[in-house]
Each structure stands twice: as C-alpha cells, then as structure tokens.
Amino acid sequence: MRFKGQRIAVTGGAGEIGGRIVEQLLREGATVAVLDRQPPQGVQARHIACDLADPEGLEAVAATLATERWDVLINLAGVQYFGPIEGETPDSLRRTLAINLLAPMRLAQAVTPGMRARGVGQIVNIGSIFGSINFAHFASYSSSKAGLRAFSQALRRELAGTGVDVTYVAPRAVRTAFNSAKVLEFAALTKMAMDPPDQVAARIVDAVAARRRDVYLGFPEALFVRLNALFPAVVDSALAAADRRVAQLFA
Image (cartoon, rainbow, N blue to C red; front, side, top):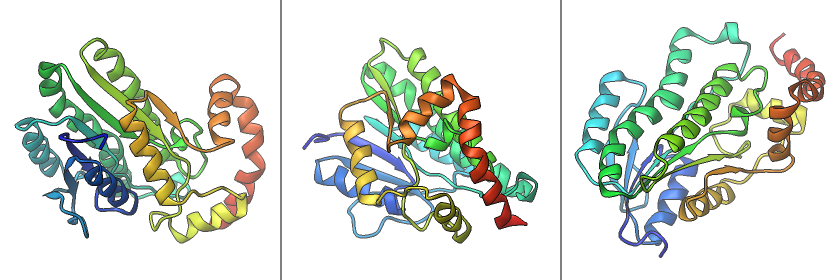
C-alpha cells in the first residue's frame, strides 16, 4: 500500500498504459482521478472529462486541479505522428505540442502552488527515449518529448528544497494500439524492441513510489541516451542506415 491515502491525478488514464497504472495505484490505496476524453474502464476512479489539446478544455481542467489537494500529478497523455515532417498537418503539429508539452506544463503550474504550500507533492512527467534520441520521421513527437524532459529538469531545480519532487520517466517503444501500422513496419524494419504495457506500467509506478528523478527504460536505449548527449555524431552514424531504409516506407 505504497500510495495509501494519496490523491493522484493521471492524464491519459483511460489508455492501455494509463489504465494499468490507475489499476495498480488503486490497489495500493490511492484515490485516483483520470483526466481523459474517455472514462476509465473497469476501475472505480473519478473521471474528469477533458480534451487537453483544446485551449478552453485545458484551462477548465487546470482550474479544477487548482482548487483541490493533489499529492501526485502524472502527466501521461500523449499523441504521435510518424512520417516526413512536411507530411504532418498543421492541426496535427499543434495537437502534438499541446498534448505532449503544453498540457503537462499547464497542469503542473496548476497543482504546484498547493503542493508548495503543503511542503509535499510530486509531479511525474512521462516522456520517451525519443525525447533524448531524436529519431528522423518522429520530429514533432521527439521535439515535444525533448521539451518535456527539459521542463522536468528546470521545474525540479525550481522546486528544490520545497518538498515537491519531479520525476521524469522515459520508456522506449511499448506494444500498444498507440502505434500505427506504419510505426509497426518501422519497428520490424529496424528491429526496434517494443516492451509489453504491463511491464512499462509497473516500472512507472515503481518510479513514482520511489520518487526517482530520471528513469530511462530499456537497454541499449538507455545507454544510447548517454552517448547521444556526449557524442551525437556517433549516434547519427548508427541511425543513418536505418533512416535510409525507413525513408523507403514513404517513397
């Protein structure tokens, strides 16, 4: 019962990974609110209906969070476009940045004053390995997750000493319906590992419980994160051949 008595808000909590996270949090004693367009299935969790890509919807849910006590905010909701950057519609680009980056920032902004006043709290941002290793054909997704990683680091520094912790978790690809047919072709072509959602959800919950700072899931991807930070040209070379093969998917 690591979360007994805690009030936790989870964006994207009705999805395949989010649902598993919510189930485990409830089993471990938390009271959970799911922030999603769809209600959660098969769990006794509160549903706060919202479209995080809609500016008015985002402001409405931020106002709701700001008026209540929250021990943990988990920013999980995300969307992804895969393909040449010129093929992404302006609406898709705006939606990607709104859901993946702006919404986590705005909701963290909403809950931070209460957490700071109480001297305890935790903001959890679920990023991606792609936020540190920026793959071709995932330009908007990689950029939004890189921004989320930077925001997590900046917010952690800002909240140092307040009792409010910031956790950033970066999974690699996960085997869910989140992946389009083209992404599955990409995974097969590049032999990209895809983790089962149960495993990823459990690792995320463990990271939250341990109040860890930065968690990168998967090997060798976690190693490549370090290499890309120090020697990006080496990673460029490692990915170049795969990028050329992937380009053929869109020829």
